[in-house]
Length: 218
Image (cartoon, rainbow, N blue to C red; front, side):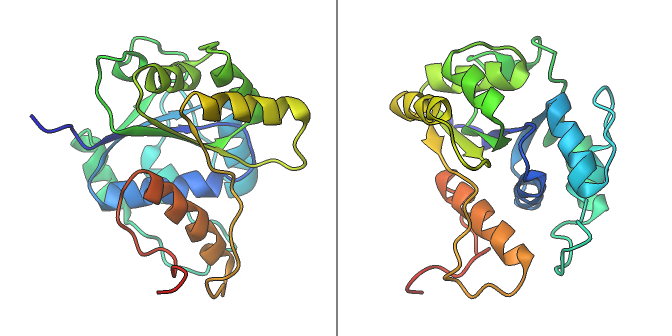
């Protein structure tokens, strides 16, 4: 039996929620089964950066995935109908951050990979110590213990020694540390290009073909 094309996405309270929104749009458009968790701090950042007020008990996932920041010059990658269909078909599933009875809290629920984007310093610390203080940290711990791909996307500067030590600890445990550091060598024409650069690198780690950026030498 083939492994299901199933991913987990956690959104936490670091700046850069637009990276997560763009990632969700790509996953939905490609038809991948995606399990989403948003921390309270993550919801607060989404409200501050994108003007979207999420009720974490019963959020409008369609509004989140279809959200387009005011500064964006590009067209939305997906329409609301496509997102609604994904939710209805359970290809896009939302799990509350405090619900440990969901499938993604167990290693017996098979997934391809998990991405925490953006990944806050407190989440980085919690995962590095297997604290499982919320569902995002627990799901990340599951991916590490099951030797599955875990991609962490921190967005903070400067970095303290403690944060660097947490990153080293996680990298040594098998996680991919992918800071939200967009390159400038691919013909940047707008902020969307910088967002897509980071999301493209995340998708590469998930082994999902994409053309969000112009690659070096191509």
